Image (cartoon, rainbow, N blue to C red; front, side, top):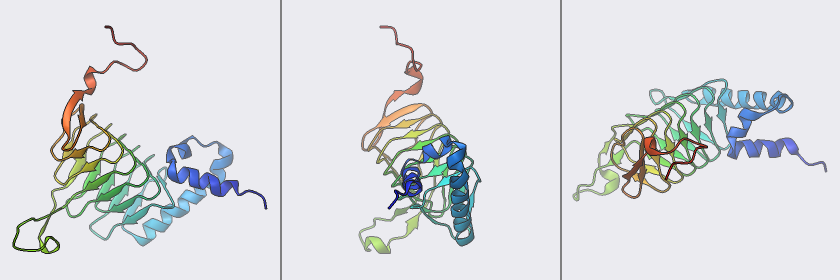
Length: 211
């Protein structure tokens, strides 16, 4: 039996979607119709808007009831094994790598242009109450929303709690838990995340910082 190269290419794109945006015309001839079909599938079933140039992996799951829309901008991608529950808005050229969980609850999640979210992140825009007189599952839910600015880099397995705003150009280190607002250009790490640096202090790429 001949190897199914097209199926393997699809799997590669599902888990490494940035490769889709580098495709040569020969592969785009089947890849673009494949994506158009997936876009139509989700836009028919759920309250979802997907820009034509975006990429949605076959293994991604999108849930968006009326009033809890999901919007995905141009050149953005959502990799395999991600679960979205709106309201969620991705700007242009936003990368959501595999295994991320985003729940917008009532107030929503908004991610600005050119931001990158590494694999396994949890971004959850709600909280349970914790009063001792009722079980947790019976507590009221609050939702303030989460805002992530432009050109933000969020490392693998980061958790972001409800009510947080992350400024433009910030970097969040792997495994951090973000519980408070993050200033622009801040480099954050730890649980709870604390500022450990500023991107503006870093040398330009390709140049050695003088000693």
